Length: 56
Image (tube, rainbow, N blue to C red; front, top):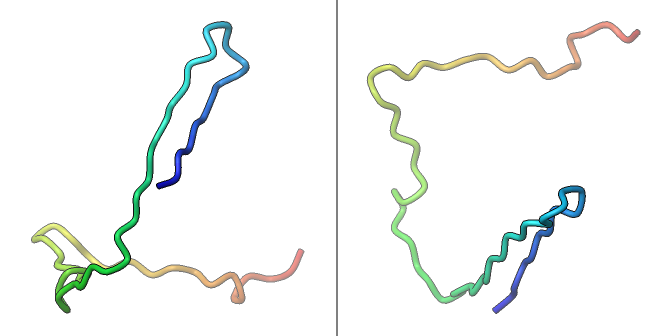
């Protein structure tokens, strides 16, 4: 296990968030576990690569 602690030092009360991470590397997933299934309102968008823009 690994513990991650984040402390906000710029606030007087210095709140903390702690998470304990424990990985199981022996898990097997089915093929469709990470398959994107869009809902009815989903639509594809185009993403600019940046290569099309002129250099400033």
